[in-house]
Image (tube, rainbow, N blue to C red; front, side, top):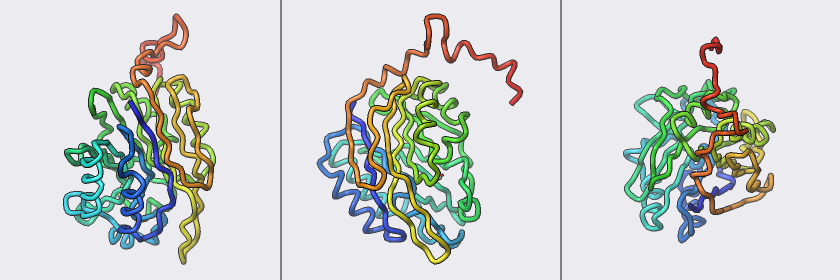
Length: 262
Ligand code: ACM
């Protein structure tokens, strides 16, 4: 299976331009699955909830999401893309799994980071694993990395690849994801953005370094910090099925949940 990510620098509020850039880069791409960053269409650093909602897409009535669906259909690929999701008067920080037939699933970020709490609503749907061409895909968004329960839940629901759209500003995630993959024996594709959102209320700089990690916790590839990168590699998702870390230790069946007071 050919999987990859597209690390780029969305322009804040320029939804049509960002969509066009994604399509220009990914049209004719030779891949099965491409992961894009969090909030890839709108940019990240909203002033408040009104601004977030004004830049959000209702996925059922969005020419921009429709363009991504057409991109998937024309190239027979699957895309995971982070976007601001408008649902009535709420805005969620969501991730859509899209294929040639349309939207397959939307995940709404469970753990909002810092000022996101003032601009968006926390996710309200359970974590879900979706099977695409026989491969089981889980989605989480950016700061979900800091909550090991998310990766664990996806892995225990048989996810083989975790798709992880991100807009990282702290420096901890990329290394931490090696442990998340090792302890769950899954692949993870973290697609981060680079550049800055310079807004009247402040600036945020994003850390790039998008990466793909193997179920053994090995870094398959990590992009540069502040450069555009479209990277694709061949992986075997079934490598995630072996949950043994030694001959006598299975990372799932050795768990002792009766002793975890969580
Ligand atoms: C983040 O969750 N975008 C840091």
